[in-house]
Image (cartoon, rainbow, N blue to C red; front, top):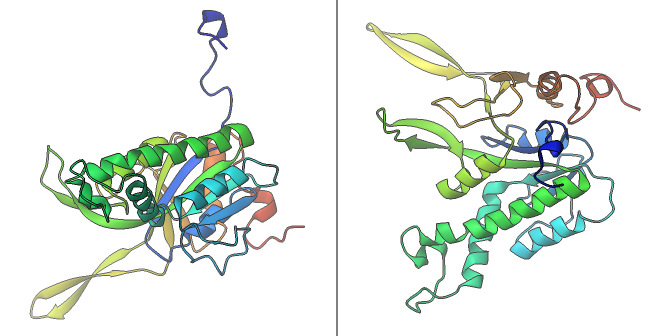
Amino acid sequence: MTFELGNIRSANEEWKAQKILLYGPQGLGKTVFGSTFEAPILVRTEDGACAIDVPTFPMLVSLFTDMEAAINALHGEHPYKTMVVDSLDWLEPIIWAKQVQERPLTDKGIEVTNIEDYGFGKGYAMVDEWWRYLMGGFDSLRLTKGMNIVLIAHSEIKTHSPPESDPYDRYQIKLHKRAAGLWQEWADMVLFANYKTIVKKTSTGFNKDVKRGTGSGERVIYTEERPAYRAKNRWGLPSEIYIGQDKTWAGFHQALSLATDGRYQLGFSLEEKAPGKKTV
């Protein structure tokens, strides 16, 4: 394919497997979300998926070479269509350890024992190389094997200081800000999932009211950037997708299917795996 006018085509002509990053608080069902995509294989950096019936490599990823081995293995022949990495923030210390292993001394010849020993911010900039290396491996699986890549991460609340307003708190991916920025740019979808909270005002007497947050475990996926959280998507998804307590996360898959005009079907078939309907 060359850069000639006769070869110009629509950018969306060829569908590519998706790059999805979902983050949110612990215990929300993020790993289950990943397992609802077509033919998933779970790559674990943490041991928190014992209750989920999903194929997985038997060992946890504890070294950078383990992550490489998983990517290389999935370039072979297999039935899997989705790689789920659980979780990205537990992978980060492994990336830091890789950097220390590759460069055990500072520019001044001082021994390095952790990522901050290189000097202010230097170590976190160095590991960009290893993050991009993994991105290349994930993209290769997408392009050569047609695999969706679903990355799971935890959330944290950090103070954001925009230049045009006063600082405020917001949910962010639980990664160093450089790494979070890289993965947010790489992903087609950055989705923030959280429990639906209702704030109620209660009178405590003496003309004093107290506001309390309540909820019943219902969940919502947020797909567009707001002051309270980071998010994005390329498909015009609704800004909020109600999930409730549905373990199949069907609301998201239905919204994605509708957003892509029915031409593409990520995840499972809604008719086959609708809540309460048995599959053969």
